Length: 66
Image 1: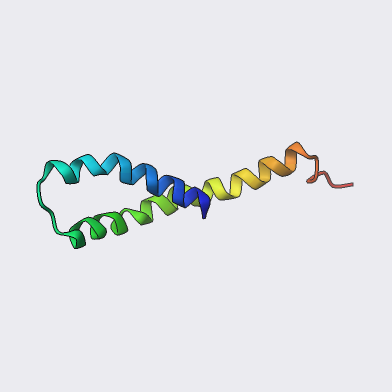
Image 2: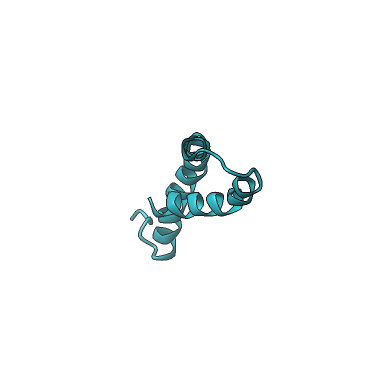
């Protein structure tokens, strides 16, 4: 969830100049744009959410089978 939030904030900060340059946009248009791009953000976050715990476990040698 934290990874999704970080990616979403990053995406929002990069996209804010597009909204400010267009003039007065409807708030629903901005929300629709952000929600439609949320699928892309989740597609990036899921592999990272799987990779990070695996790396943490391998650093602590907790995934060694005896």
